[in-house]
Image (cartoon, rainbow, N blue to C red; front, side, top):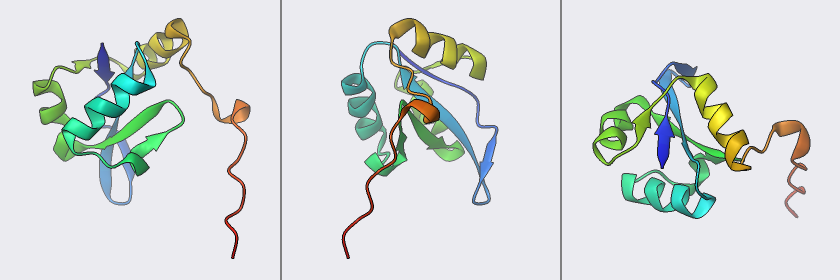
Length: 94
């Protein structure tokens, strides 16, 4: 199942939602692709979804839940990847 919170997170002059799957990252990536969200919107365990795509995500079947519920669902599914446990990306060669 796919879930997202309401657009309430400001960044770069826009509001954003978080989109997650409680099944797999593969399900999450496939849904994001269908929604037209680029892979660069993926952040460890969720996609950042701009407010203008919120209605489309709901129409495609994502369930709207509070932000805390997203974290609970990710933890229950074993898919939570907190920042402090994810190693930083290696620097790109010049």
